[in-house]
Image (cartoon, rainbow, N blue to C red):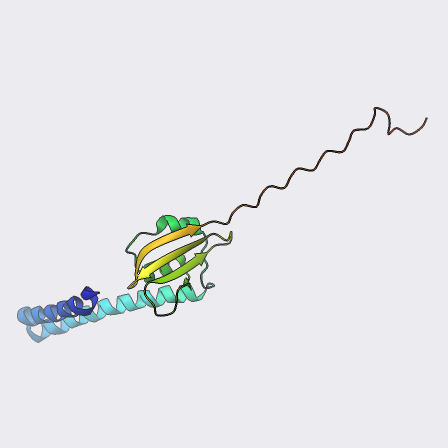
Length: 152
């Protein structure tokens, strides 16, 4: 979090200062233009991910098994939403850290992901328990040979 709140703006200011040092006001304009382009690229990516997620039901994923295999600790929530193309179903209280989101597939398998400060801390997958097999029906008793033949 310290990178996003402090170091990133300081880095931007330092780049603008370097632009002024090496190119004067033209360098400032070019550096500021590059920073604005970088921000716009990230904003566009965020909007595209959210637009795709709006097309699908909340908490749905094509395959919970594949999602479970692709998840890695430290991924951002935006990256997970981009992979699933769906917003997760919130399972924890609203605005309380850590946040737990669930994605479910068509076979009722689901993956719970725990996020702290927007980063994946852990995930757990559950599959539905298979139904117990039904006992096989008893075979019908066999009749005596020729017992079911019509009379001659």
